[in-house]
Image (tube, rainbow over all chains, first blue to last red; front, side, top):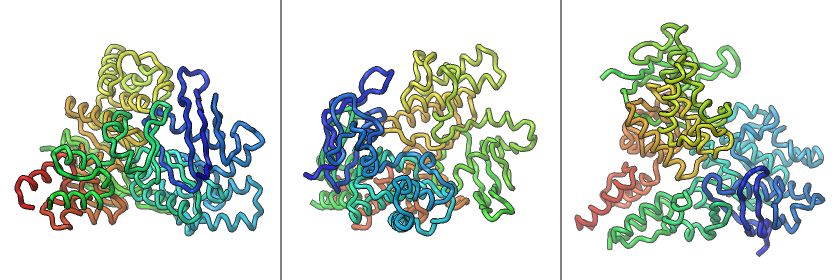
Length: 278
Length: 287
């Protein structure tokens, strides 16, 4: 496996607090993959995200980005350039009063030449579907649009990987759908590795791999079809399987022969129709 | 029955006489019965937040009226403060507004400003803490050292402590994990059951609204698109999706089943109802 992010026995606790947030956590993320990270509030998933681009350093253990140790300050610039971060609240991430200037901000700080910045900003806005807003004021946009501007700013750095910490928590269904479509495009068209931290099971369902964290440890790790069939286990970690799986599980309990892996509404309807016609 | 809250031809225009003029609310009218739980949904920019900011007089209508128990809340602008005690508004991410050094003092802020004496304030703080599931051991803790879900409970308790007749919650569960969502929703439903309070719940989550609301108000571009029982609203799935919203996952599955010729009601939205419908099909031996 070509690994882009690697945690080796990483442990972390915040200063002046009792108890570790992350315990001996080991995780490798494959280049070009789409991984969803789930976990209850306080499980340590946001802390993990911050380890990935050296915002935080582990107390013990190591975190490597493309083979570079995040605790080595000589690599800091390179690590931050390669791993882009997007946070929950778009209003906290907007730095400029014009969309194109906001998108250019990070690339400018990297010392990219002006002609190249022009190209990158235009490309990034096209990728997130916001080209027509290039001269708009970001604070007048909707939440989903602001979040896509934040993502465009990260893309303009031409990162290898983008880590998003609950980017859709404040968005309406249309905004969430636009952000998810954008993430698929980054992965499929630009080959950018996506790590998505989320509370939305239907978003995690769209990933290649789902990692569940509870109390600073990885408790489930696998394809969505594996992880989401563990309804009771997920509930014990304050999470929930997707509604489709819960319905299928209840039907199974009632003696109907349906697979729990039929997770999309289409697959779920097909499975139920098939079981009823038997 | 007399309405608890009535919105009459409400219009609100931002930036009148500027190039940015925006009619955020356009002739909105509806009324809510005492004790009802209304879900308010709509895409970003549909006017939900502007609407609820009018309910307790934080914003003034450009035209139209808000009636609380049949009386215009702006009849005497000097008394608008009383309306704010009667209609409690909990903003999105209310935990960002915590400011006191103990949980008790933060929750006591509202009732103290109502001019209540110390004993009455204490009684209300204790009652509010109980409603949101914060035990007495939290009284003297700093709200800032609590978890996200607990902080949000402190903020909600601060509004509940004013014993509002109408409680409005903007994105109550945003950012909470599934269990946290369930617990908080359960506490609000219990609060409503015990006090008879009228509740307006603004949400982006169809599943959440479907689970608890008596009626759903669907906002679209500043006007009321639909206002009906959940089953009626979800029966018009195409219309819901056309305005950038979604129907609950169970409804999606049942619409697809109906498309496949299986005789089910395509507007079912609760898992328990879905299960019963499917099992009765099997028992009926029709298939």
